[in-house]
Length: 186
Image 1: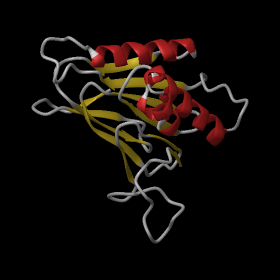
Image 2: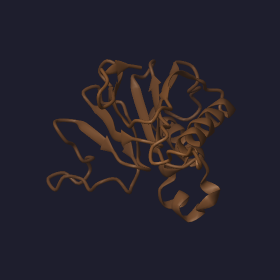
Image 3: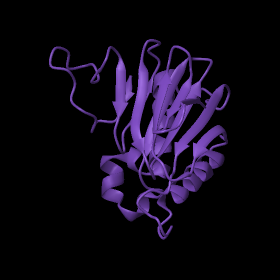
Image 4: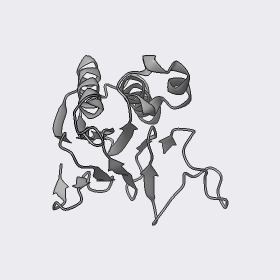
């Protein structure tokens, strides 16, 4: 598994393994990302409000990646982008795709067999729709993906509610949970 270095510390008994909760459940916080090909792992991110999760499923290799994006463009804070590239759409998507190359081998055409999905981008804590961070995050992620020849095949974005995203590497299923709504597969 490849994971952003600002992730939670590894368990004390094995400093080379990521933090594992509930038997291979990896939780991503704001600005974090992960790419894994461990079939019994689950990637999860909670409470996506205006943030956007971009999920990458590479079916030929059965590898999965996810990034929890908070803002659309790293130019507003280059120092933070250097420290936590997953925080921004432009650097977050780039770092995940680079991690796929590291995991699967350079020179491999990732577009073949890659499926991309998105969730989040809600308008929360912005009742007047003044800042539109959720919308801006969604649009920035889509544009960056398109520039790399990728297009989301499914998205659950917008609205005024937060979402939790759970991705099973074993099944490739992306599940969206929203308070007060039934769970949906994306």
